[in-house]
Image 1 (cartoon, rainbow, N blue to C red):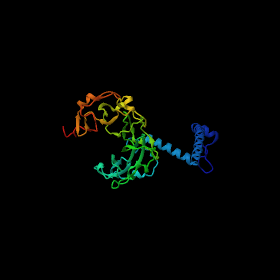
Image 2 (cartoon, rainbow, N blue to C red):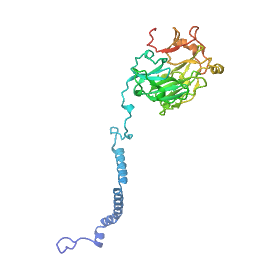
Image 3 (tube, rainbow, N blue to C red):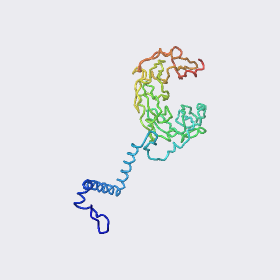
Image 4 (tube, rainbow, N blue to C red):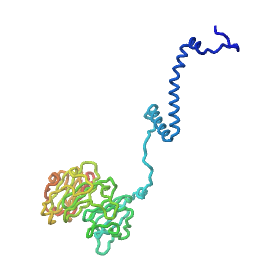
Length: 349
């Protein structure tokens, strides 16, 4: 029996008596000095974290990620990284209205609203006439190619109205002396076009690779001596396409578009074989280039006459890229223009 204390309550057990009557509790208290050190270290670490805003942010991030891994499931809102906010450009704020860009032979340019414009019937200055027109949207850029193969970019919505006779393109860009404008195209940055020269070379490129911010433009299509750029052909279809190339001697070759490289600039690969001597003297050159789907019909115009070549008829002209090609039928070897008619849109089917 333990002796009572002066107050009448049991006296506290300390020292040897404590170790004697409560050996297990004494051992536990002895062991508790270890966790005390750990708590002290944890306190120091927390104080260090709280004293630094950067450490605190890092700690919060770690704990949020740990909680997301522990408690998250497929239904939680994903943590996404967004790009920094930026101001929209003038072009991005514009409406995408249909427009037709018209260029005259003397290099005067203008833009008409809509796509139902007969550009050839617009009024032109004395001694000038229609050269070409391209259709697109007002928020897209128009790219012009000159006779040296350089490309120039102009914001379409800044072009003068077709109600006027336009303005000289040389007021917007600085082509080399003696250069003339031969071709134009319009579209979005990711749109692809087939660029070709009448020397029989070409490649596929993106509009973004042709865009130039300076007035001097940028080199795009490398032209052999005496050669000129042909009208660019839009590559829109996702299915397999074939290239049709026709020379002024009436030779035609059809080959897969996949045989041409995709390039930012250059001369490209040979489309159709034209003998070097004839190419140098301009005795023979390419007059038309087009793209065909597998089931398209090709309409070849020669003067007031035309001939329709169905897919089975085109087999006679198919071959590897760079071949000589075969002659078109007599009476149709002097080709003025060609057009493709898709299956289902052919009025003569």
